[in-house]
Amino acid sequence: MSTHTIITLDGPAGVGKSTLAKALARELQLPFLDTGAMFRYVAHALGEDALKLDGPALAARLETLDFDLKGSGDNSILACNGQVPGNEIRTEQVGKLASKFAALPEVRDFLKTAQQRLGNRGPLVAEGRDMGTVVFPQAARKFFLDADPLVRAKRRQLQLLEQGADKRQAANAPAPGSEEELRQIEAQIRERDHQDRNRAIAPLRPAEDAIIVDTSNLSLDQVLAKLLDSARSI
Ligand code: DC
Image 1 (cartoon, protein in one colour):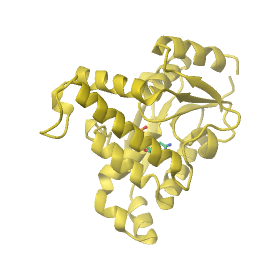
Image 2 (cartoon, helix red, strand yellow; image 1 turned 90 degrees about the vertical axis):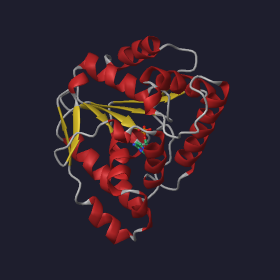
Image 3 (tube, protein in one colour; image 1 turned 30 degrees about the horizontal axis):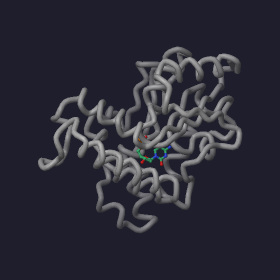
Image 4 (tube, protein in one colour; image 1 turned 45 degrees about the horizontal axis):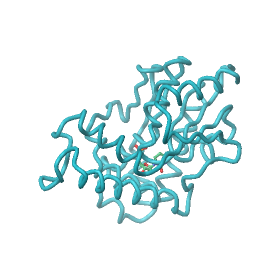
């Protein structure tokens, strides 16, 4: 593997990208770049009102954000202006808002430049929606993970149960683990898929040379084994 090897992992929400990209980065001892966290950070830091700013005003707000990536594998740390974002950016509300910011050209341009700058410094595993298509078209290996929306909703529900009820937002949310909650999560996933796949700029889609892995009927370990197999042959 060369000193400038970039591996990309793209795919829809809830497909297990973060877990797999992190595990791949750990096994290969490479830095892990979670680009969804960058969009989430922007959404959280700028807030919903910034969606109404005109292009130059939005670009000026973005210019105040300076992203940095340190460490590798599990110890990869993405910081912005010296601060490491915590769980406040992981809520469904911030995810939804991030998806709206992600449709704005100023935001995409700004983050693309920031991501490419991090990639220029050395090898990494980059995870997101447009890593293989737009940000790192020269990547040594490109993976696109996909899974049935209901399977992704079930995984997300399990994750929420493991995290505990305090991570849920609305006071009137359906009972944890219930059918109703599952249907609600599936609807949110389908809505976000629609938003991400149908936006005009950098829509979610596999690069022509991406290896597509359907994870619906595979365990995380099985998917990781496939990715590692392929990445080790670079
Ligand atoms: O992967 P995630 O759920 O943390 O991403 C949050 C949102 O950010 C997602 O709805 C789409 C957007 N995103 C994007 O447009 N491009 C990326 N490379 C990463 C995320």
